[in-house]
Amino acid sequence: MHAWLATTCHWLQNTPLILWLGTSDYAYPFIQLTHFTGLSLWLGTTLAVDFRLLGMGKRFQTASQLSDTLFVLNWTGLGIAVLGGFTLFSTAAVGYIDNPAFRVKLTMLIPAALVWHIIVQQKTRVWGQTPDTPLVGKMAGLLEVLLWVSVATAAVWIPNYD
Image 1 (spheres, rainbow, N blue to C red):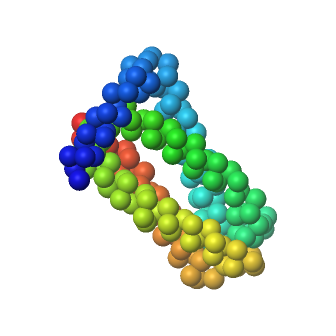
Image 2: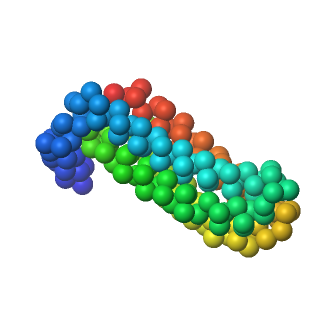
Image 3: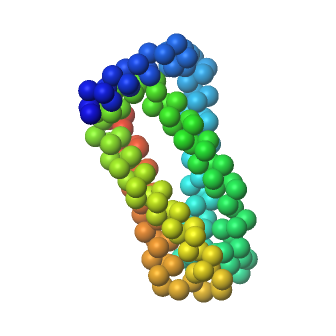
């Protein structure tokens, strides 16, 4: 499996478009900006709902109302972050597949954080009908915040394993 993955990553990072993106003085920073903008939208809207589940901002909207209001921005942010992240990955794919911090980030991001986010988003419609969130909703919101802090911590460590 690793040989196939390494071969695919080598091919990907050596395609003409990705070679140009990786060496361009302007394109690579733009891709980083795109990725970070998507992350800001995704995590900003996610954390707003999580903090609302934890009891912050009770006077303004229920968690369900806030989740519904931010739904489109939330998933638009994910799309932008994934596009930018995949492009950044593509510029050094071979190095990333063996990077322990990158592996930890993906291990937490895909099965844990992303799946948990979908569950919380669906359950917020039930938990967030009233200004006071039930304990299970508060715990779910707190767990999601901790998962995203873990993903961000792993992401920050990626450059330390070049």
